[in-house]
Image 1 (cartoon, rainbow, N blue to C red):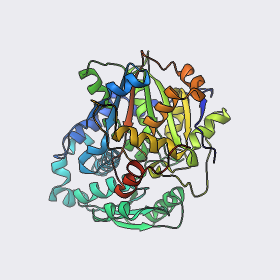
Image 2 (tube, one colour):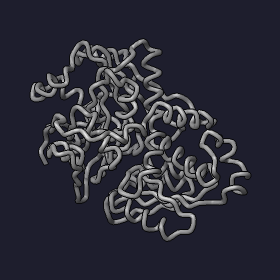
Image 3 (cartoon, rainbow, N blue to C red):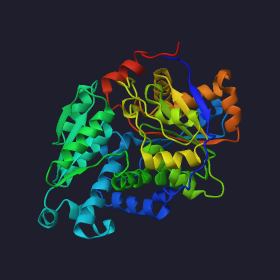
Image 4 (cartoon, rainbow, N blue to C red):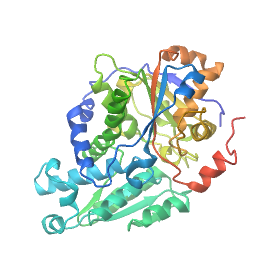
Length: 404
């Protein structure tokens, strides 16, 4: 595989942008109000890396640190929990604003709603979030994981009481397996953070749940008197997170949006492939999708997110594994005076990309096209901590996946 970062500026024709409204400020506010009802809720930190910004030649650099989310070491629970609540609310004929955490975890829920089985496929974090939420709400969860999944990620999900399997297929095939089983199960529901034709409602709710993270970041930037970011870097697997973040900030700053950079693992760069083709149609990447960025190892795009991204993303970037590994090391041992961020393989790719763009003249054309420099205020999202502690140590301490 090519060891260099690949990138393409967005030249795709615009669509009617009908999905942007999913990430409206009102919808995200409703999701955030739901999450605030959780006793485990607290706003995750926004690390301000002033020393790193100065070293890279930027005005400011902030990293949203999701390793603190609900004690689960990743952001994904925001989407699964809100989607499950929206589904239950719909079945009860209620608005989700009427369903607090206290009600959802009470005996009244079992009496009013009964018990559903929530099926999902996951590379780790999404499944753990669904399992955790199902456990708290007295529901059942069945989670399928792709081949190559580490035992640590399996155990984290099983510890929440879910039925978990590791299958000899890739992530996208696990999604199909979960959907087929849900269809054959009484009160079976697919809670998947990707969308396809005929399955768009629950993924849209998951994206709104992710909006809590983006909304918190925007509020923290205002509190730190940084205001509107000029550039937002966000990673993508199927694209649900990217679509949520880009959609939220496009709605927050409709007349003067930030520049959006979407990053993928090179082994599963379906969005980059679509942008490279330039016709606006999505592309699929097949095979084993082998990458250390397990949370990004998805080859089939979320149709809703793709529509948002093709309209609002400025650049799509395809990243070899060394990019994420370098980002992990930089965040773990930043410039003196900056806070350290424990960022896992799928969380740190933004730091590696930004370092390459600003420090390697091989990417000067991208730097110039994005107008990154001393007046830039950059926001990125570290979406997970050390969700695989052994691998994290091998990369950060042992130097695995160094750039050649």
